[in-house]
Image 1 (cartoon, rainbow, N blue to C red):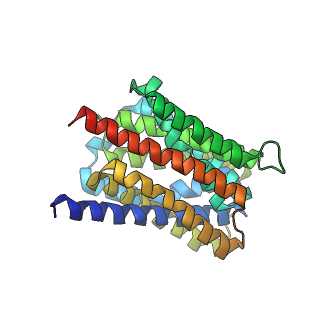
Image 2: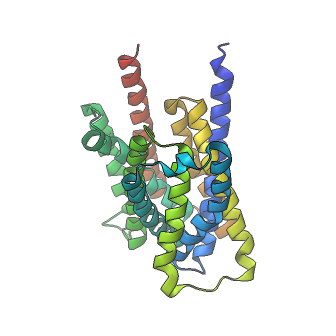
Length: 294
């Protein structure tokens, strides 16, 4: 057995932990969204994780690498992060977690589509076909001509996934010069203060019984962010990334246990199309990488 195998197994286990933490975080966001406006919930998401991230960043790299960064790209990520969080909270408040995840799974396809014009990467015809099929899966999910999920909530999740995809492209650019700690810290800070400014005029006083939800939000978000970073550090992206789709399993479990709902057959069909397209894209990515570096 190769020495790399234990690292790959550890990377996969860490990624599964990350997905679980993010699913728990999203459930907490959904619970909080029942009592607070979207921008306020986005503020609570950033504010609850910011102290943990700040302590970790200062302890691991110190102050200087956190300040010597490419500010324009960080500001763009901040704007995208605020919009993504608010849109996701709005959507998940009105849709089951499993449905929101199914729509959000379009993000990897969008990242591939955007990597051509924005990063100059070559996207071949087979990958464009996979992207097109994935978009068809979104149309199935939205059901524009049926009883319909074509709603502001579904479009908000679609908007959130688009913002996430653009943000992921900026991460690829930033990773050439800036530390992971700086990227995490400034994103959390900008979500906190950007969303807070937008939420201030309609701020709803926090209920005492929600304090534990907010603490849980911070802990789950921080562990999830650290775990996903560690997973991609230890393992190959083509092996780790497909595990993100296990979020759908947790979404179904949380939907059933907390809200007593299950996805219908059309949601399963749409999700299956999008996931299959994403897995094919990841496979093509691996083949393409192996061809470039035999």
